[in-house]
Image (cartoon, rainbow, N blue to C red; front, side, top):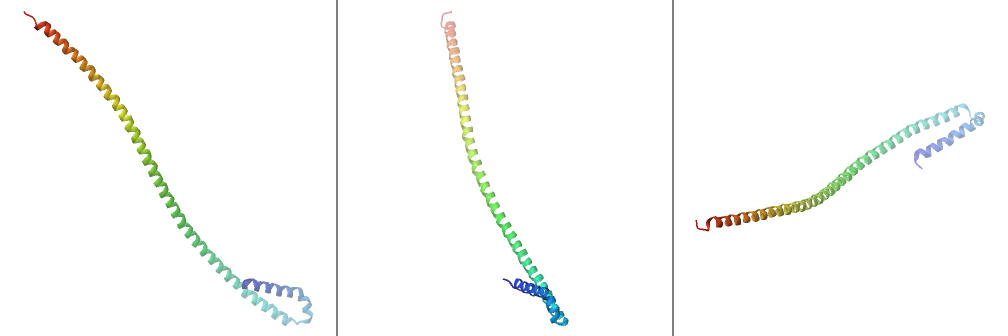
Length: 153
């Protein structure tokens, strides 16, 4: 039990005794003694009230400081925790976007290669057709030339 509680209990007991027994002692104790007791108790009470005020203010300041330290510590911890979380999420986003980009490049390359193959086939088909047509034209030219030229005129 702290000093304040002990003194408070003693003061309450003494005060209770005097209040309850005030009438009984009034007939056997003279009024000067009662006044001295009341003044002494009042003096003790005033001192203890001042001490209680000082003790409560001291406790208040102690716990205000405790709260300031707690908030400061919790703030630092929270900022660090959130900074670490943000870095983790940024790293995750980097990995996911890198993977997405690589997959997109592969799909795009496959689509380009497919369309390129189609275009090459069309070009080859067109050139083959043109070659065939040109060969036919050359053959016709040869035939016409032979018909026109390979005879006696």
